[in-house]
Amino acid sequence: MSVTTRLLGLAAISAAGMALSPVAQASCGQTYDTTFASYADAGLYFLVDGGDFESAETNWTYGTGAKRVQDMHNTLGVATDEWSLKLKPAATTTTPPVCITVDHESLRFTAHAGDSGNQSGGKLGVQMLYSDTQGRARSVSLGYDKATSDWTATRSFAIKTTKYSMGWGADGTASVRFVVASSDKSPLRIDDFYVDPRMR
Image (cartoon, rainbow, N blue to C red):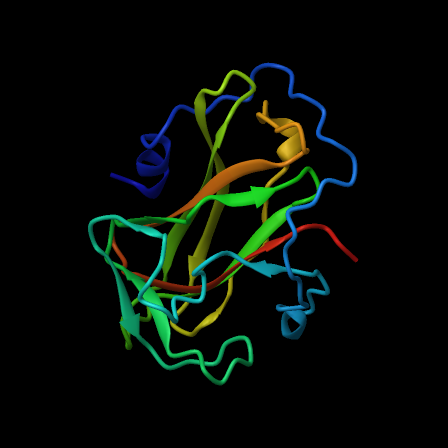
């Protein structure tokens, strides 16, 4: 089963219906930093809860083949970056609920093509799970990227909340989750999962 098929199978994709207008200047109370500045990205990002995998206590959902592993690296200039999440081929992992507003425009993380010595790279896919204006579970693919044999930042995955019938709350926020899937043929390691709220 391909990355595309596996992501699509988690929930039906739908962009039908009219979204409620989110409240202006809604806030999720997050702390931001220019995390990816070394990649010529001036965006202000916040770390998704548990997204650095440094703690064994996490609300991430690990599918079959997903496991937190010790893995010393310093992709974003964090000297204490000792852990990452390993995904075997055809594995998925899901974030805990993430508060977003209409201003949360993209996400980005770091990735590595599996075990040391793997030179082939591996396709990865990202999906967003959300509730529509009727409270129904929906999902949408945010796109794909290819990990390399070295730790590096992924491309920016656009969230584009205004395209979907998001079920915004009265305070202008919504709760979503993100899914990362590895390809059928290559293991994958991910770390440092951040979201950009379009603040400049």
